[in-house]
Image 1 (cartoon, rainbow, N blue to C red):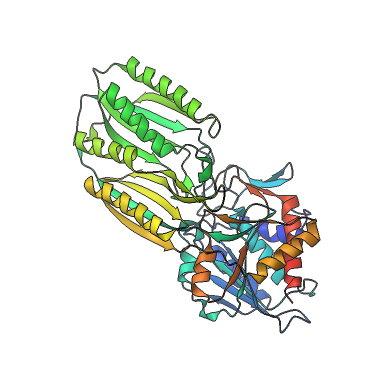
Image 2 (tube, rainbow, N blue to C red):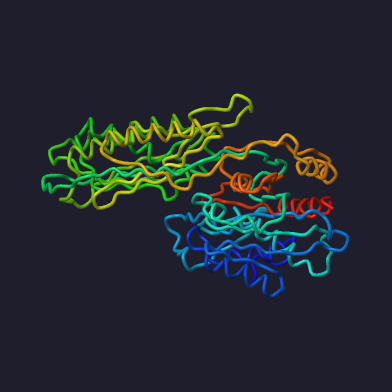
Length: 485
């Protein structure tokens, strides 16, 4: 039985539930891409599916709108796949386990993918408008792939097939706010070579940093909460002063654009070290962290437990290099915007920390609304990593989306919002990267706005999509299209 059956708007939640039943994590988009193609085929709508899996679906304007200017409706089909430790879902083949509580939709134990499944659901409901009750200009519905791992689909898309210059990006999470500018960014993948040796005179301990709120590294970075990878670097440096250690294994985070919530380290220390001293340090640092992050990460905790000995450990030099990198590479908010109050201008997030056979990988999401500051920041990372014997590779760079002071679309959306809700929306910029920047760079004269219904805790297993907000912004979307005659 459908979990969302009967929930208004029925036509939207019908498609949202279908989408949630299809695996569609970033990098695993074939099924959802083919689903969109089949949707178009079943309704005799012209479509394009490119080699990357991006899908464009075309539809003529409704009666009276045939000659109106074409409108692009855009979102992305991939989702961030995060889950609780005790969740057995396999994102590569399983759908999500939806449920409803207290006025919102969520997925049990996993991310929901409301970012950006709701855009796809809105778009399909509009395209399925067989009776013409939803008035709209000619439409080009553009659903891209792999937005969450660097806007890869939008970057690869051939925009020469698009006629529209009016662009509705439905990829925001705050009702009452419309976005008109975003930061540019890049993923900095750092590789630090390490060497291992056999040592049979060490005890092994497992250290876990957990209880961190996490979240989107653009949207939530302004909260300046904890990053479990960075916190672990601090802890390893502290333990090393008490009982010199060797790193055996070190892993934390899964996505460069998600603030990591948990990091696990396995370390070796001398059998003659004082275990009580280490436990005392862990107790003390736990209290320190609880105080420092009492507002942003009230459940932060650090534990240490003895585990089975492991003979193969990093050399002292490699251990020191890894700790040095974690302690000295920048992380978090580096600069606030001086023109827009509360807007982060430049930041970075150590989202992935991974130990492999002969190297440690550190993946950063670097963002800035000022291109030169982004370049300067990646240069800083490269300088330190190079001095430690490693190297950096930049992947998935995307441009900033600059504010358009003469946006007719923005004016229409403000007037429509006032008419529907008796209140003007806030006009804001965002520190996170949006596909709007890619499309604005490819389509000359693009008039673009980003908006969406209320969602909380995106990119975490606590993600929520609010039903009443989804319904209100469904009416808002239809009203915008009607006003674009």
